[in-house]
Image (tube, rainbow, N blue to C red):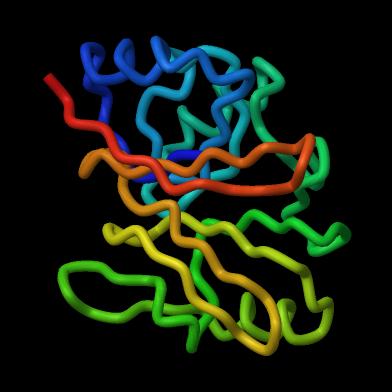
Length: 160
């Protein structure tokens, strides 16, 4: 899973060489079509062009993807925005969070919520739900989520 990345071809090629089965974007990805096997959700920085391109090519996740959902219908949830109070959303040193995401989390109680929007990578917890910030790929951060064993691992790249 990745979030927050401009269109830097060399770095995208480096991500593609990691040979993930799928690359899941959690918003603010400028050139999703350049990632191998990309599917994703939108962030507030994504353009109308990005939306149309992803929708036309079947890359836009509209409700579920494998065991992951954006509508809180599974135990494993994706959101662009972090839940308020998770302490995992950080932009320019300021804590960020969305009260609507928190309300959905408290109502539906997923096991794990993965989110983008944050520069920092990290793990938090709200009422028994593990909250994972994938961090900004621009800073080298990503998360591997294994659907076979439902485990995740934080990863970091150094771009050459």
